[in-house]
Length: 264
Image 1 (cartoon, rainbow, N blue to C red):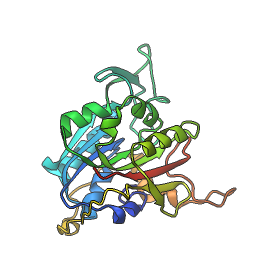
Image 2: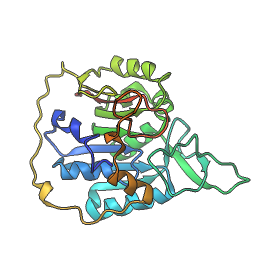
Image 3: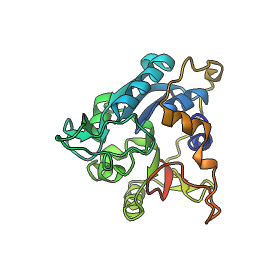
């Protein structure tokens, strides 16, 4: 989906990056986001990609190893507000773009897989230490709210560009206010369900490297049946028969998404 559509690609012209980017992808699925960045000539210093579903994680690992090699790390974990290295039980599944730690929960008396949890802060501290996370993409199917509730302000401020999908309209305004209070601001990018935000006052000027990565074709791409379905039939190109607007690409209660930018 990330590769076949412009759902994230449309934000890239507003990204100004003078150095190879540190990328954190939460809800990475099969790795389409960093692979799209490579195709679009965004050079990456490191891409840390976290996926909850164990089978989807295997596809993610193969895609990253085959195409990005040492510049990418795949992690099988559920990113949420729970303490680091807790465990959650999930129903076994092949994975999908709408899979959530809430609607896929299982108990020990039924068939399940155990998945460890991780936090925003632990990921930043372990993999990026005191560095800026240049691009952070979050699509974790409703867990974004507890993730931010458990993340200190100073960690959020380490993000330069933040792309996020929201899944609960009752919780989104409060999260948007907090993000704005931390220095993020933005502008409309044309789609009613999305907006782009940046820090106009930083004065930092950066340009993107043109490294010729576009000519280096992806060596191999593997995805499950659900992922392949979305690559062939992108749902963001369909129309809602009642409203006439394009339907959201994510499953579940999706009331919008946003991209944020802060220069540190």
